[in-house]
Length: 342
Image (cartoon, rainbow, N blue to C red):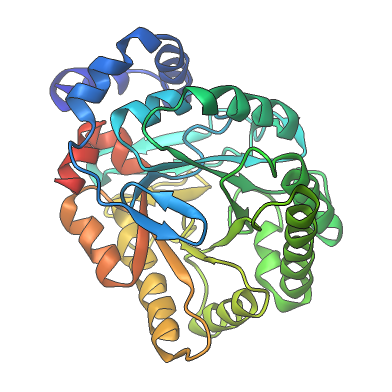
């Protein structure tokens, strides 16, 4: 029904407007959630434990879809195991000028240059804490954090720490986003001159806050770019191990257009089908590093171009313990959850 009826109607409208309208509707029609659960949620769970988080299945919704955490109860109802909220910045910001999301329907792809538009850490914390008591199916809520647009790269660590501290009691896990192509110079944080200090500062804060509140330290992932060279991937991997992060999310969107069959002059990050081979290559590199590492194995989360059960299995065969969808959900609809976990 979604692909034959709903999606063609949605695709008649501006991408961002229909996205925001949909979030508005699904966050308010809560009386329909039992129906959504009956239709879309898988009947069986295949739970796995990662540190102090229990995931009812390996499938989750990637960051960027529900930036402000307004529809957590809906994602819980339709059967996602976990959802990543954000990217969250200390202060709310509007993001880049519109239009800024573009469909490439023949390619089953999107290009976006949103630029971390969100309501800010305080409001998003409030949204998560209000939703959590009403979650009935064990949804894990991750929080993806970044820096404000006008914060310099030199001072970026301060923004990440502000978000981490403000959302510590709301997040089940954190993701440090250094890989969006739509915030100027953000990807420079992959460089060791910044990355070593950033990861050290965040992990130190994690340990301090855990001790202060008498809880376990939070799981922390680093979300990386798909446009890294192999030497850069290895360097990032080593720093993540050094600072005892839980793992790496591979990957964010790409600025490459090498896999596009059609020409597009739009700037921004490319997601969907054309991203998959690029993201899978990075995931494979990380898995190879894991196999060689005798001291620590990182948890890998695979994302990029997941539309089917086969795409999902490609991620798990390349070492992913967890998998996320984003563009695939837009093209396939909520039925993708059962299709993958069947």
